[in-house]
Image (cartoon, rainbow, N blue to C red; front, side):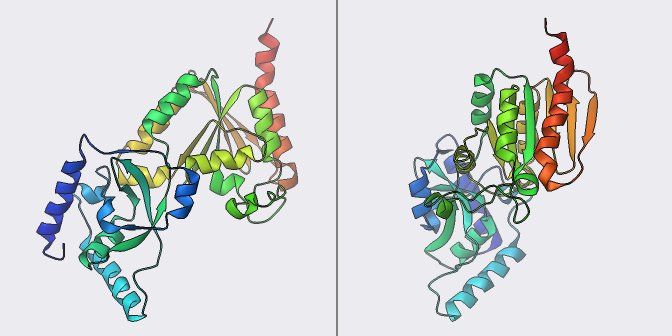
Length: 298
């Protein structure tokens, strides 16, 4: 693995070829995710959908060299191995893990002869998961919200922290009024889809909201990063979701945007931007959206 660029490229392509028709991602229970902090480098498999594995793009050897230097510096400081940002992985059948984020760190570890490297095991939402969710849903309306920019907050009016021991597991703080808003949306027939640029496990987010007595329909994490790494993957998943619903409301910090898929029309409902009034203003906007439908109902 420490040889020339061409030899390492050949190794990557051989790994990808070996995985075809054999390996697929499987869900990992929360206890195993919590306990798995590192993995043998040889048990990590490159993701064939990532640019790292595409012959026309391939590994960036400048980045790999920079990580190799970090590994060398860690050894000089008497660390057993690199203890920086963990590689994000999914467990795979029949064995090992598929790399989601961190191919260049993995490559550097291999080329440095490292046996183990820190990992973070996650469960992502895949196409088969999305299709199952949509098939089981009877709703024609969707509410879409961003976890990082809208729902999780560091300050301002917040929901009460979860009681111990859940507060040790779920450290994110939730914007005040979100559970009441989600209850209102569900009552009015909306599926709730959450989006994040971070590598959260989908079941982690779903279980988090259950602690606040509400249910979310679907969770799409690291979509932007996955789309950049894997071409149109993120776009295809979003198109699959969008085509299910006749209308979607995008809820932001200062606006509710209604998009009608059939007519291509949209309506904007500005919000005041006051945190204390945020959830109620959204409910009022949804009430305006629902009013015409209720008037037409015999």
